[in-house]
Length: 283
Image (cartoon, rainbow, N blue to C red):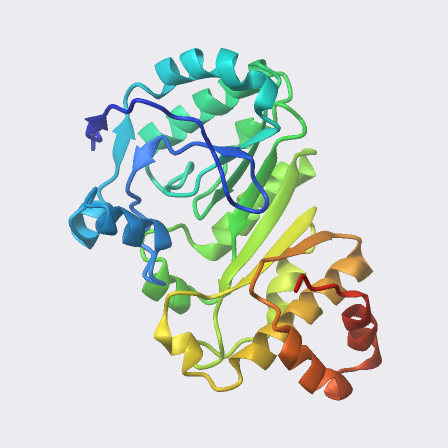
């Protein structure tokens, strides 16, 4: 299916997100159709850019994306540390060849200018990204993995790739020397799905970095009365696992609750207490 084309006036923009300075979104909408709900879809609906879910899951491609890059790179090059792809779409949207092909061209173009790229996707990564003759060796490729359950994936990420496929193709890049990471966000509470976070951590133990974050924008999470303790405990498990396996980690803002950490402190194993003792919170 040929995707509809749209034109934009700009492509690169500054991000207010804690781990990215510049970003771009070269498609409108996403066929993954995540039902967490998807924050990007919520914002696009609020702004009147898309009408509803049905429109959102029929992505449109930015037809002038490469032209915009050619205009914007010379102006912004000295200000860009790295470019993040993407916050309001998916650069390697599952079974969307046009979007994948454009993503590869964009990454190559940015890399040619000495600009590093960081991606996150619920699709599968092309093996060619490991070719350092075409792409920078310090690009970082990430996958979202919040459960190993396919029934969970089909309910909340219906159009995305199977979870094991994501991990398989991410590991292929890792095995060829690429830098890889996993986003464990939005992580579900036990009233959504009962699971052991260790099972996921073992499956992704090859990555260079793990980002962990709570589930937002859904009342079902707050209805779990121990959700603050749950997120604190699992964030500490992620931190402990990463320290043991020499993996970088990042706990998203708002995931840890300082007051609840104090309340639960004496119930934690000694290894967790040591981690808590080193945490610092901005007042």
